[in-house]
Length: 143
Image (cartoon, rainbow, N blue to C red; front, top):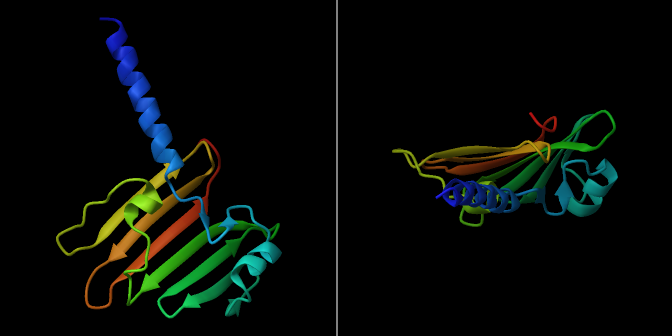
């Protein structure tokens, strides 16, 4: 009988490990901590370039904003799919689990991966001009 609580704990830990492993960690080869020059090598020349961020137009329906810290390393990535969103990743691919749509068809889920030092969110805005916004952002480890 004493093995039962241990088995529940083990199952919980394995589920958390699988979930953490299935959460998005990068976008087109760009990770949190990637140097700005490497971002440009991976994504091309930005459409808009500012001191602490770059804006990239990947396609007519996909754009990305990359934010940098003082050392010019990636601290956040925000990807937006608009209009034709059928090419956008599904929630499972981003937050590691399905996300239930609200009454209006919208979705929201945020997952903190504290031991890896980042969080990720998936937002779907429904309606006549739907969009999906995916964010990966650094945070202090253990937060």
